Length: 357
Image (spheres, rainbow, N blue to C red):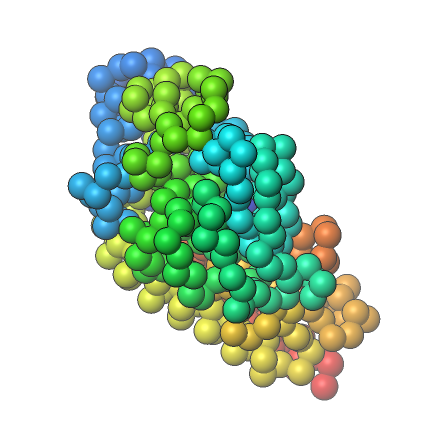
């Protein structure tokens, strides 16, 4: 039985993507070779890389606007260091918004490269909200934020207006909602939550920002080197790029980001409505900052945990426990999650309520 996969990542992908990727493992483009063994310099794979990069710009509405797309290795965690290396001037200043575990990790890495200012933090509230009303230093080289906080289930609803480059980690909600992507100087995201399998990281960067730090940057950490080589400076994560390409094509074929946002809003509304209605559960994030990708909630009475866990497992649900650092439950409802799976979870929550009354 196919599971209802609520895992936060590596996560659910569209079934047709699994099917096409599986076929490519056996025989890619009728070449007689597997996607796992073809040369990354082959005509077939170069075409995949080119098309994937073009699809990213098309979906984001950034075609012809001076942006470059890279598919890199190392995960979003490597970008925590690569970003200040490439954007923080020698003797300059970086500004960060602290909204969760991954934002804090990015801040830690930036401090190795220079002055790092935390403009606001919700740590004292266990990251259950997005700070508001903060000031961004006008003399900072860039401002970094995390659009969606996977562990704590919060999401930025409105991005700040600023004249300095806006940098955003969109690992867990990229391509899930309509945003004016041209507001950003750099966007990055690990593929394994909403775009593809683990192993690839997407970076979208405004080319005019590069080469201005006064630093000597090692080649593998230099965005400009990767841009100049069209994301082929070294052997890219071929299979992860190919599967991401298939997912991007699926997204385009199914109405693009606009249609995805409507589907995601419907799923989130269905689940949050049940959490708010059902007397056994409570959401953890402030209502105005709730994520549409990662729905975090608790049982009000932990004595019901064993029974609830048995019920959702019996219903074919997988990946529901919250992050080990916070506990509770987390339903990750990324682009490829069908609303029917969300309904299965809601049904289980209602069955638990009936069994206890």
